[in-house]
Image 1 (cartoon, rainbow, N blue to C red):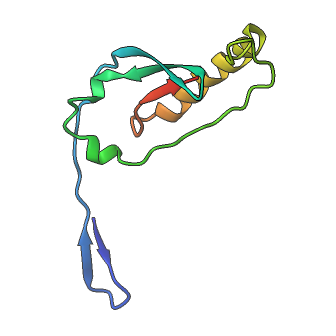
Image 2 (tube, one colour; image 1 turned 120 degrees about the vertical axis):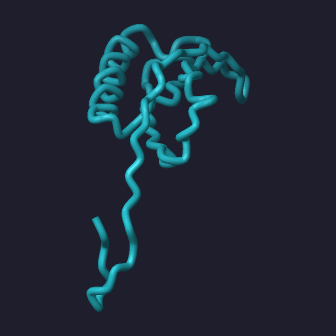
Amino acid sequence: MCLKNAKGKKKLKEKEVKIELPEETYTLINWHEDGLPGVGVLNSSLKDFEHQYIFSWHLTVVIYFEELIENGMPSIEEREIVDPFGDKLEKDIKAGGNALFLIRET
């Protein structure tokens, strides 16, 4: 497909790339920031994924918890609500193969 400028002349030619998405493998990471623990699940299969440039945009969803336990992490009750929501959100965003899971962190 060719795009045309205002004068009807060819301007750009779309490139089509066919890729095979890597099977997701996960690495658990732990850290401390501002005296609080952090836990993340990282899709480590993307480290050597040669088509990273195609997925250069990142979507970040931030959810603020109200019920934190003593170490600053969310309560079990809030995790029981948010974890299924996060799983569904991830599934819906990845539908169609136009997105990849990078990391989920708390």
